[in-house]
Image 1 (cartoon, rainbow, N blue to C red):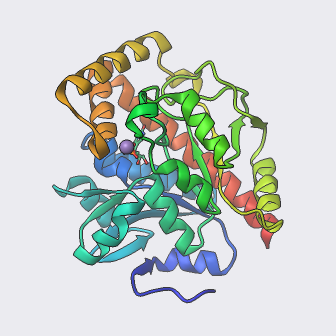
Image 2: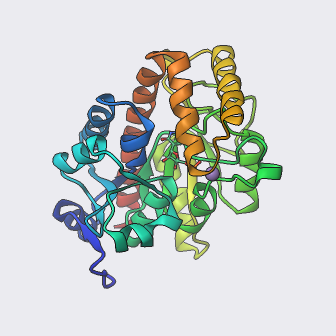
Length: 308
Ligand code: PSU
Ligand code: MN
């Protein structure tokens, strides 16, 4: 195993699993600190870890604590991220600053991918990835999640991206940067709370085994880079598209009026959409996160079986 810097703390359970070639699934922490309301956030984070374990896999929730990149957190540390005031939202650009300042930082998809890759974790479960915002053609507001998906050899399992974004532009960007977007048992790109987006994914898969074979081919051939698997929310938890679109339109208009932009924009829109759709959206968010955790765990099991 390559030498690890003193900035990286890999939990014993995780490092033992990695050394033995056993499956590990990375989990992000921005969803705990900024993506879900309290107290659901900590409960959902712990439930995601349990969903990963239920598939015979080791969870590695990732965050920056006390000047170190922590891969694998205790329940107390997860609770700290969910409850401590002033937790940073760390994308790739923020990681070095947060380490030097010893900030408590939750990692976004981009931040988590970068840290997972450092630790050698190959599979990651999240809710929705960031993307090109509506108006990105002039604002240039494109999440750092997208280039990071292209950069690291990690499979990311998500429920697509939220309709707060420009989804066609997001797919274009991923194509340009060479990220395979693979629909999980569907041809349609899911839009987080809703099953349908009206957009097709370029590829489709039926099984975790198939995803593992694709990743293995991409990596062992030397091509490298990441893969994005898009799994729709379980149908019984999906929200109706028209109601979602109305909430999204209203939130976007309010954000523009209030001049919200930059890293604040995504959490602001997420919170506003959650308010407008009531508690329903939190229940749906929980359901898709647990679904993605279980799918990622099955992919990790299949990948471990191939790479042994
Ligand atoms: N989308 C969601 N829930 C989230 C996020 C996005 O539905 O919690 C978070 C993720 O951590 C993602 C980040 O990586 O927001 C993207 O932020 P930005 O658009 O500022 O890059
Ligand atoms: Mn942005």
